[in-house]
Image 1 (tube, protein in one colour):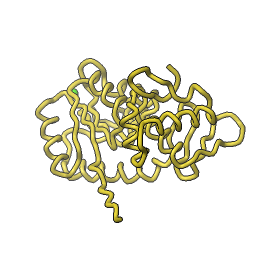
Image 2: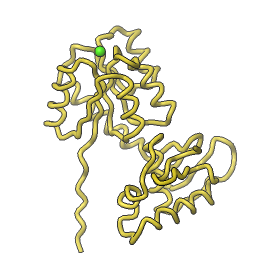
Image 3: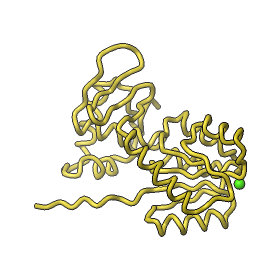
Image 4: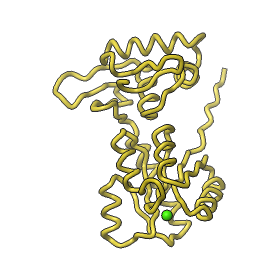
Length: 227
Ligand code: CA
């Protein structure tokens, strides 16, 4: 039987309070094949950024509710590693340095050239895909190629099975979000007969990495880390 794997559209979150600019960017990026989500203020952007795993994030700085670089710092603090391009009217060298120091991968000043923005987004995604083989699990790191979890303290890495690694990576790339058993099953255990497969592998992961690695949220599913 041939199985065709279609590549999902890359997803982008635009955090921009200028609604006309946000709509223009959304239309442009949709035409380029991106799945686009827009947040018009910083709080909403933070919520979406912590809840969903985007391939790239475009971030304004001057935002209501939560300033752009504070938002970025909070995402990074919570283990969100998706590449971020800051798009800001603050464009002098000191502003750029501030943005890059806050954890942005790239910085483009407004007004900007559309083709340059698109090229930079492509470059960001390429670089990120090469790096994305390492996933952060709290203060530990999961290498998706070797399927080994290393901690910052000395000690042998813990080797995971293919499915343990996939399950852990799925939760780790959605920090702060409770993921239902049904979603985990369809993402990681496509051939499983029931959600029990998910519970079994959560049990295996806890045995290998400690009970605090995954939290059970009663009636809702699982989340990375302790409660
Ligand atoms: Ca703004």
